[in-house]
Each structure stands twice: as C-alpha cells, then as structure tokens.
Image (cartoon, rainbow, N blue to C red):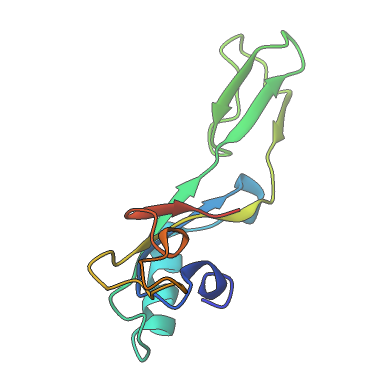
Length: 125
C-alpha cells in the first residue's frame, strides 16, 4: 500500500496490478488472502488485487528447444530431462485503478488537474 499511495495522489484506489516473476513462487490465492487481511481494516478494504504471474522459461540442453512452462513438467518433447529453468524474481507494481467518480482537486486556475485523474487505470512507473 505504501508503494501505491504516492501514485494515487490522494484519490481512492480501487484496484492494484502486480507482476510477479517465477522465482518469487507466488501462490495467487495466498497473496489474495494476505492482501485482504492487510487492507480490510483500512480505507483500502474495497481495493482489489490483480496478479500477473510470469512463467518459467524452460530450455532443453539436449536439443536447445525453448518453451514456457512450470517446474512440475520439466521433460522436453525430445525425451530429455536435462532442462534448465530460467525465471525472474520481479515483483513490480504495474498499474493502479483510481475511483474517477471523485472530484479531482482544482489547480491554481480553479480547473481540474488532469494529471491527478487520467482515466480509470494509470500505469505505474
């Protein structure tokens, strides 16, 4: 939540999107449960969490075939079990969704500040 807060510019966040690398070994149901436990007693209680899991990149050392897969299926179609698994440990805030029904704060001219509300979903940087 602390990572999201600066991007929200004081507006109510309705959803958060994360990208998780294969090496993080994220179990989506467990992360969703943890998110709910942390956000329920706060103003974030209605904020949903979207999780994008990046797959393992498998590479057969015998035939050089490459594919996306899971660690529970590591044999190559060529029959070799000499397979290397590559993955990242990325954990990235990808986007946030803001309640665009709120009135954005006025700027010095009294007009809405467009940078404070750029539609429903804003990409995190």
